[in-house]
Length: 179
Image (cartoon, rainbow, N blue to C red; front, side):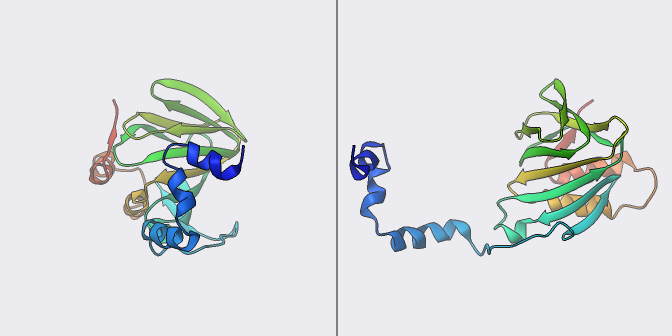
């Protein structure tokens, strides 16, 4: 089968063969906004202590036309996030080092290096570092915006967190905690 015939035979894609590439690129650029390529080295990023979750923000909304935010969590054993639900963003968790016990939609499992989990918006989830080793995890959220909440949480006074204040800040960003 010839390539052009194949493309025309797939619903909706046949039109792409009729549009000159530069015209397609120009029309697609309106979705890309002002995003520019970026190289982020391992030691780069904005470091935040979000109530014990040590996050290094690598990509934020202003870098990605507000499409995605990505950070690295470096977390001590026992630290975690209680059950909560996002109404705005989906999240992906990729474990690089250590063990993370994660609950998504009532199902709990332990993730190790190389494992990942997906938590769509409107689905309750939580995570906690288990074992004796510090864990490293790359977390992505899309669309972006949650990084603004993390900044507010990181700016709270040191010491035991005021859960009422934490819940207030999180609710501003469409996040609620489960019982």
